[in-house]
Image (cartoon, rainbow, N blue to C red; front, side, top):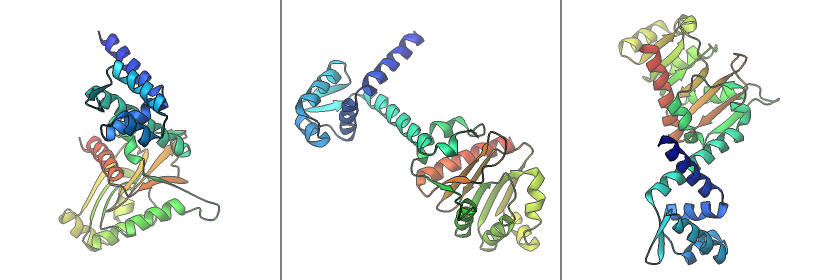
Length: 265
């Protein structure tokens, strides 16, 4: 029974994905119901091609006609959205293959991988021969212009303690997940009075982790940055993804919460 359902789903998705014309028609009908003439006008596809594919979609129960307009059936909406999510996921991975390929993804939870399309508006920042510190300086700028910071720091950069201290002095909020081995190195470089006040007022929270961290993440007021380790266990300081979209922020926050849960459970 399960195999039959699996095969049926596969066949449905294959049928829809097989034709670019069908996908364009479905995309338009996803936005709003339309007639054949309306679809021809919207898609710029010939009348005969639209009509032929509309008939196939209707015969296979993917769409229904009400008066002169065609509507997507409920399951077709799900199939189409699945196809679009997969297409967007592939585009994200192929567009930034240098970022994803030969990198360790083990610490990214299943939900975050499934929702990787939320990063579609992100931008890849890479080092250049003229600016080898471009990724770090980009992150530094994000943190410097933020009153809050959630971060997963797998290593200690000499500038991090001061950046954190500046946020705390501005009455901001800082939440860190860091290796236990660098916890003291970070906190000891933050002004003692500032640090104590922030901890007392719960403006500074640190989650030291025994296991090695294999991702880099910052979540600021209006932006996020995300970095990975290479398969040789070294952090890739040459490239990061950044974004200021709400979806990317939510994606990063979900990843942070998931790793925090693993740390404190």
